[in-house]
Image (cartoon, rainbow over all chains, first blue to last red; front, side, top):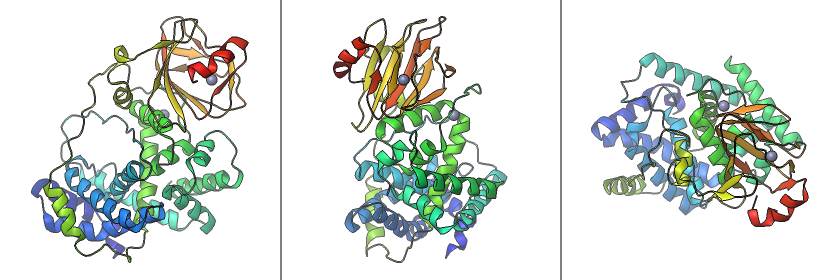
Amino acid sequence: DDSCDTKTEWVSHVSRIRDAQDQAAFAELFQHFAPRIKAFLIKSGSDVTLAEECAQEVMATLWHKAHLFDPTRATVATWVFTIARNKRIDVLRKQRRPEPEELGWGPKAEPEQDDVLALQQETAQLRDALTALPEAQRQLIEKAYFGDLSHREIASQTGLPLGTIKSRIRLALDRLRHAMN
Amino acid sequence: MSNKIKHHLTDDLLMAYAAGSLPEAFDLMVATHLSLCDHCRARAESFDAIGGCVLQDQEASAGMSDGSLAATMAMIAKGAPIAKPSPPGCSVLPAPLRDYVGGDVNAIRWRSIGMGVKQAILPTTRDASARLLFIPAGAAVPDHSHHGTELTMVLQGAFSDEVDHFARGDVEIADEDLHHTPTADITEDCICLAVTDAPLKFSKLMPRLFQPFLRI
Ligand SMILES: [Zn+2]
Ligand SMILES: [Zn+2]
């Protein structure tokens, strides 16, 4: 059931894990996200067994890092994606992943509900905009996130003309930006 | 956090960083810039959000194997892996760079490459290279062009070249069309992070002879 995605429901699941080590909340998150992480990793080139293992490790990381989740900056799905992506870099590419410095804003107060809601709504809007993209553009964006394009190709996108790929992705991003304004 | 950064990362780089498809040296450049630049950090978070949408849209029908939740709970019961704390420091090098150097500026092991210019190569995967560059106040890096993409970010001081003036946090993106002579401002020694996916092409004979030894 996708109706959960646009609500702030998963946010409270993560708080329940953070505050009360709530295993029931975790089980619901697991049921929703673990198979999606597994499917994502398989499309990124992992075999089924490794994808299953990594999906479990990603969910375990979610439990251990629940106190670091900031619902004013990311939805739970976005946060899970970043953990899964880093796992993929670590396990499939055997590479370190430099992350930006933590923002030093001191001990965190409970986030403003309005900020949490605004972020959730924006992300829902982004998801609608992605779905509405022309098929060829949407597929290229997806491929880029599965790591289907070799990193040499992506790296060359930083400076060299890559014709169709580059312009399609750019078009897609323009459309997304337009939809978000 | 500075609001004065004028030269930012491209969408291509930020998207590839979010997707996790850059060479390690380029990840290090992006992470270092994001540590100094709120503007690009917010843009990077938008690219993460696209990744979140892609994840949400995956088919869940294949499912997990029986007992996978129990296996995960057992994994959790073993406790969190101990995170290695970043070496402390608050001056020149942002945290991701301190992790590679093992400290702040005074921990950098410089090697002279002539004319007062020094470099320190950072340990990354070999598909691209990352190094710190030290250019004495007023000095220049020999003029050169590039085989591939070269990103240079200022960490201390500032430099100018044929394109513009670059100060702390600014990133210059050079490609094969750019032929330049970066020159440090006279007021302060300049320290930069430079990453490239190909060796530089130096115009003068001497630097070209030395290039294989210097690994730049
Ligand atoms: Zn920036
Ligand atoms: Zn250059």
